[in-house]
Image 1 (cartoon, rainbow, N blue to C red):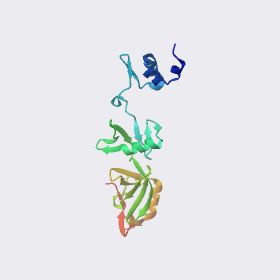
Image 2 (spheres, rainbow, N blue to C red):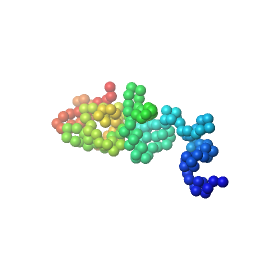
Image 3 (cartoon, helix red, strand yellow):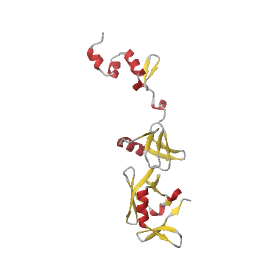
Image 4 (cartoon, rainbow, N blue to C red):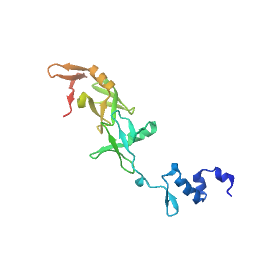
Length: 193
């Protein structure tokens, strides 16, 4: 018969004490399916053996794992900090490359205001960005886009940021386009080419 103190110890502590039978029982329990029995021993799979998460970013810049929205601030900060892009698409840079499905662009400019000769924006991750008015372009549905994060990513202006931008723009009857006048310069709003 086992001492009562041993039964109160968590399963891993009991297993560490040499109770292989208990470790196999833990490996079969619903909350520990990540453990495997291999030839009488129980071990955890290596990261390369893990099934890849189904990470995606929706059009609002919200992160999801499958159908579950990711809301933990620390986890979101980690995901955003490790997001990369190459010719193959978006992915997380970790020991294992984790693909990320992006519906539109990974970042959203939530607020924009004039700042000297340019624009200053607040992104959906809380970071701030200087926006070059010459780099603004209109995408499908007349939605403005701009490069952010030192040009590594593109961001879509939110509806609120678009209205803030439109308050700064004037309609040019000759060209039939909107024009931003900032710092004594004119910047035509152009469509994506």
